[in-house]
Structure formats: structure tokens, C-alpha cells
Amino acid sequence: MAKGLGVVIAGIVISAVGAFIAGFSAKAAYDDYKKLEKFKSGHIVLNDSNKFNLEVDAGVVNVHHSTTTESYVDYNVLEFYDVKYDSEDNELKLKRKWQYWFIWFSNNKSVMDVYLTEKDYETFIDLNAGVINVIGDYNFSSLTIDVSAGSLNIKDNINADKLDIRLSAGDVNLAGDVKVTNDAKVKVSAGDVDINYLEAKTIETRISAGDIKCKVKSDDILFKISAGDLTMDIVGEKLDYTIKIKKSAGSCNIKDNEGGSKKLDGNISAGKATINFVD
Image (cartoon, rainbow, N blue to C red; front, side, top):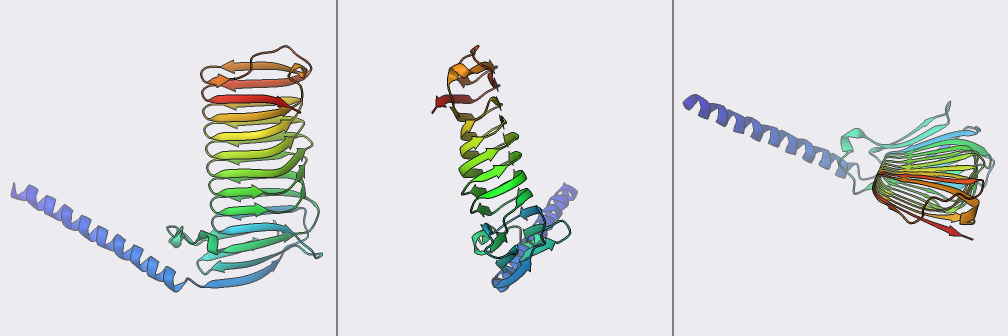
């Protein structure tokens, strides 16, 4: 009995010491943060490449058109943020130092402005947290967007040879007109995607959970819903499409239809699809 009581007391002491150390570590890190609550600024000239990659873990990044002959970056960020640039790959990163991962309330204080010259970019955007705003019309040979969390806002028009959007959580908002020469893919694991207008040779949307709202124009459309909601306005006449909808569960407001040469295929495991044909 005494031995068992001793074990219990030892366990309590160890837990208390652990809690004290954890509390002390958190307090020390917070004290360091207060000391570091000052800003650092910088200017980076980007290389003249058609390839441009952007990775953001925190903060606010605004992408603009450059009014000069150079692509460059101006930033004003808190001391515990790192701005890294790989000139060989033309890859820019805004990251929060790992020991300050818990400080989320200062995200919008750190701002980085990216200015790009006009060209057809091959671009990969990786947003893990924070906000990215793309301002102005852009051309892309390829645009891949991967959002783990945070908010990505493309405020104007985009032309691309191919488009791939993957959203794990957060939201993606394409407010302008998006025109894609070849394939456009939108995959949502969770979160919300809102597309003002998307035109492409083929359009594929997949929803594991979350929502997609879009207005589209294409001769070949495929959607798959495991759970969540799809609201899709299709530019054109319903009679122009051969429609095939497969449902395990969930609902869709349209039925199969033997129509024209255009294709609309849907597969719904659960969730809801609302399809409208518009002018």
C-alpha cells in the first residue's frame, strides 16, 4: 500500500515539474516574443525567370504588377519571421520561426509585397497559413495552388494553360474571370472555394468535404462529391449536354439526359450538387 502511494506521489511530482517546465518554457517564449515585437524591413530583387514559386506559413503577402523592369520584393515583418529567397529556383518563402509557432494573433502585422513583371509564369503557390492577395491580371503557363490553411484571394483576371487548385482547409476566392486553355482541376478536402467564372477545355471538381461555388463554361465537366456541397452554374443550354449522374447517397437537382456532344458527369457518394444552366 505504502509502495503504491509512493508511486502515485512520485507521479504527481513529476507531472507538476513537467507542467512547471512547460509553463516556464511558454512564458520564456512569450517574453522573448514581447522583446521581438519589433519589425525588420528589406528589399529583394528577383531573378528574371518565367518560373516563380511562393511559400507562405504566416503573415500577409500581396502580389502586384511591377511598374519597373525588375521583379522585386519589399517586406516589413516581425523579427521572428524569416524571409528566404532561393535565386536559383526563383522561390520566395515567408515563414515564422518554429519556436514561435503558438503566436497566431500577430499574423496580419507582417506584410510582404511582391512585384512581378509581365510574362507567362510557371507558378506554384503553397499557403500553409496566413493570407495571399493576388492583385492585377496575370498570365500563367501553369498555375498550381496548394492551400493547407489560410486565405488565398485572386482579385482580378487570370489566363493559364492549365490550373490545379488543392484546398485542405481555409478558403480560396477567385473574384475575376479565369480562362484556361487546357485542363482545370479543383480539389477540396475541407474549406470553401468560390470562383466567379472559370472557362476551360475540361473542368474537374472533387469535394471530400467543404463547398465549391462556381460559374463555369466547358464542353467536358466532371464532378465528384464524397461529402459537402457543389453549386455550379454552367454557361450554355442543358440540351447541349449528355448528362450522367451516379448517386450512392446525397442529392442532385438534375437527372440523366441524352443530349448533345458536350459532357457532364457526376458522382455523388454523399452531399449535394445544385446544377443550373445559365446565359
